[in-house]
Image (cartoon, rainbow, N blue to C red; front, side, top):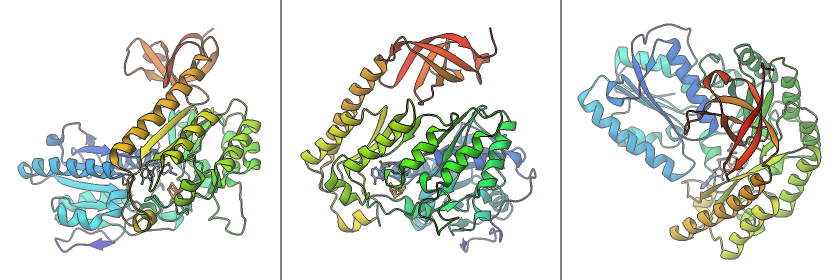
Length: 475
Ligand code: SAH
Ligand code: F3S
């Protein structure tokens, strides 16, 4: 823990405190950027604030607290936070009692810049210590000053997930569960090992207990999260090469009555084995969807990225999945314009998208991150307009493939878990099928949380529309 000399407001114990209502009546303006793990971290902190009597507001000038959960994965994500902090500074100039907090990857990575460039920020909480937010805010309101916590607490009992308030969920029927934090890989472009540190897994029984509590509270689908989830448990059993502990977690979770669907991400192809695929395929509650980022379809680029697999090995991994998991769909991440990427190397990525036939692909323009291996050793030499063009081109290839594949589903039936009313059309409900495809169909809000069978009538590249042919709980 680092304390700054502006006041007395540093609490000695960063772990969470007993529920209370010190924040009664206070309003928080909360913004979350980044990955699914950040979505869940935000939920954890909002749950703590809720327990302490805070309510949320969407109007910054009405807030007593502005709290931002940040992302460092690309420069653009950090730029958005700086501009939000600029806006918060203006509001604070008229409301000096307001407290401003920054948590997550950027707080971890650029704490010094935040401290010096943004003196109006009162609270800086890194990727390990953010569960103390509620307590720290009370100390700040009571004593002023500034609190900065960026130490790593690697011991599992200090992981930020402890003592989760399961009822503080944005979605009544689905929930994320973090199974591990950090990543032991050293992909040359990636900031995650710097911001989130080495892999630390949560004990299996603790995870099962959390899932049970979520299911008791109405959850039917869980998505397990880890930056590199196939190595879940390796740090708990360092003597074994492939623990397969992720499979054990899925199998044991599937035994929980009331839980219907299990998903997990993200899978690094390097850490997947055929035996794991076999075990995934044997658990019907494990949904047939794998997110396996390839990053590039060129062996030379993969080498520069230090991904430790070749395009042929990537194909092999997908082959195992298709052999052992009926109806499996694969989604993927690609980076375009990585250091030195030639037109020919980029063509490799287009070819891989065509050859695999992904259900969906996320494409990112390479963004140099300070202190990564590539920042030190490899020039960021692909011009921005080339990165942009490749981004558009690769997405166009993907959309064409997704469109053709989805059109092939017209007339077939899929089962969805209804999430609620569609954001774009109030006469429709939305849900996801087994493979995580987004499906819309006519319906009403009271159907949320039920399974429905939908016959697909129209297909787009990113979603489909159908008609409901059966609804759980009706005859
Ligand atoms: N294992 C992680 C992946 C890291 S971040 C997970 O849980 O999702 C998600 C994606 O961001 C990566 O798969 C990669 O495609 C992209 N990415 C990571 N670093 C990047 C960088 N420096 N520039 C552009 N994209 C990047
Ligand atoms: Fe990043 Fe590679 Fe790990 S992309 S999160 S270092 S697997």
